[in-house]
Each structure stands twice: as C-alpha cells, then as structure tokens.
Length: 95
Image (cartoon, one colour):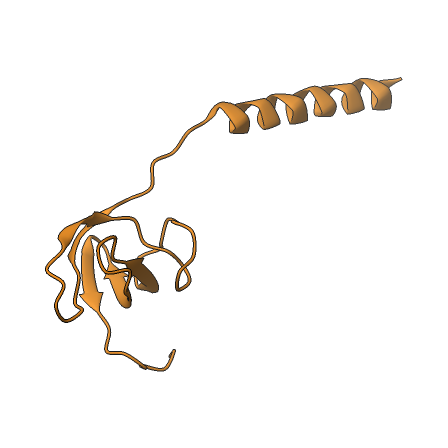
C-alpha cells in the first residue's frame, strides 16, 4: 500500500511540474547589433540563433551564435561573452 501511495504522490508531483512548465514564460535575450554586410546600414536589437538561419535561442556566454539581418537577409556569426557581441571573421573554424 505504501508503494501505491508513493506512486500516486510522484504522479501528482509530475503533473504539477508539467503544468508549471506549460504556464511559465521566459524571454530571450536580445543584443544591440549592427549589420556588418556591405551596403546595409541596419542596426537594432536581435535575438541570436544557435545555428545559421535557425530559430531564436538563448545562448550561453562564450558560445558562438548567428544573427540574421532583417533588412538585407544576410547572416553573420558572433561570439557572445556576457553582454558583449563580437563579430567573427567569415570561415573561422570551430575550436
């Protein structure tokens, strides 16, 4: 009987956790950037992506990320360190 009560409690806790995750919201961090592509002078705030052309995502500090310019559609790779964005040279291999 104790095992059944324990399983019921675990099931109840699991359902509560799933419900809390569904209700929780989070905000992705955007960064002030300027498009580095020639003939494009767009600047503003963008949310980075983990992959080129991918969906917006939260990026861990010191990791590479991609931005896509909303004006010219060009992508560029960056390294995010704390709140600073550094544009990486094109074709730089992964460490």
